[in-house]
Amino acid sequence: MITDPQIALIMLGLFIFVVLLGFPIAFTLVAMGLGFGYYAYYDETRMQTLFDNRIFDLFVQNTFSVMSNDVLVAVPLFLFMGYVVERANIVNRLFFSFQLAARNLPGSMAVAALLTCAVFATATGIVGAVVTLMGMLAFPAMLEAKYDKSYAAGVICAGGCLGILIPPSIMLIVYAAIAEISPLRLYAGALFPGFMLAGFYIIYVVTRAYFNPSLAPKPETTDVALSKIFYELMTSFFPLAFLISAVLGAILMGLATPAEAAGVGAAGGLLLAAIYRSLSWERLKEAVFLTAKTSAMVCWLFVGSWTFASVFSYLGGHDIIKDWFLALDIGTIGFLILAQITIFLLGWPLEWTEIIIIFVPIFLPMLETFNVDPLFFGMLVALNLQTSFLTPPMAMAAYYLKGVAPNDIELMEIFKGIMPYLGIVIFSMVLLYNFPGIALWLPDYLFGK
Image 1 (cartoon, rainbow, N blue to C red):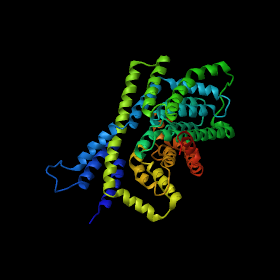
Image 2: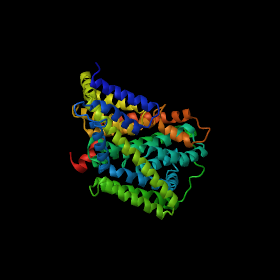
Image 3: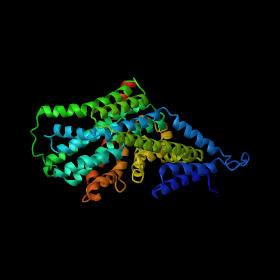
Image 4: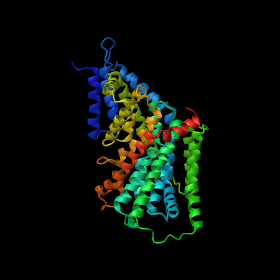
């Protein structure tokens, strides 16, 4: 006779299969949570009507918990700030100013694109938005400057994914809610790893361009007045950098909660757009619509995943996976390696939202057993999730770029360009594992151990 834990594993396998068929993730989670939950909570002795089943009570409670979660209030506000900045064409000015500032470096436009991606990713945290916008803005400019197609494509795809890691990342807010740890500590822990990864990217593009100048020809003229560079930075980079720094600083110094700081950030984004005279009624409506659409997706993912995870755990799914890990007798190092390999492989068919909300909770109960800090684990996962957008054949960043790139750009050329960045991400994970202070020193310094 089939047991409840076996039913749980069937539930998990069926979910992955259905998702690969292309069904919407959130509603698949809800449907499977309710369907398998009806079986799990079925009780003949108390059932009087068809809907007299505890799974419906659980679903309502999970929906209420998501809608009343103070941490998740920050999600739509940060999203709105990012979409306003995007729609107000501030990024165009930002890329131009970085391009002038980096004009004497090898691969100057690639460096400017990475810096713009890092700043813009910090403002929006949405990979698709960053890659798409930079694909329309910086990618054609690099191609026009005779940059190698694969080299330029890799820069846009890798840089666009930095928003997963660099605060105020939406992913970090979601992980904080799931792992039940302070988003303040997560933000502090992600700063150094995020800028470390961006720094490695810049070192890579400059080094390659230095040894192979044909990949990134130098601009025809590098004689630009210092006053012009200073003016462009003052009118584009510094206002946005000040806004982001104020938001993050208020959070890290304990002056505001993430939701309060996100509200200030959203208001600041509107103010910047108004100052630049680029805020029209149409653009504002687009920003509000996109914010509502993305926020609804995140909320329904939470409702569905918590219902799915509750049923999966009730059937004994978490226990059987935990027992399997313990039976392997692999220790802390083996657990971390196996967990990260699993997340890496899941990144091929799934995006970070499904991985964080569905699969990471399977590992969280095991962290105490293997003596792993949840914050440190979260930083490893955040680095690893860069690969979920960069690993062929399901590299979503490549498909985002392909959607806005010229027709003569082949998908295989984009894949070729992003492969070196996968190696950089893996190297960063190894470095973080051997030197955990990269992630743990700042939160411990600011908030104590």
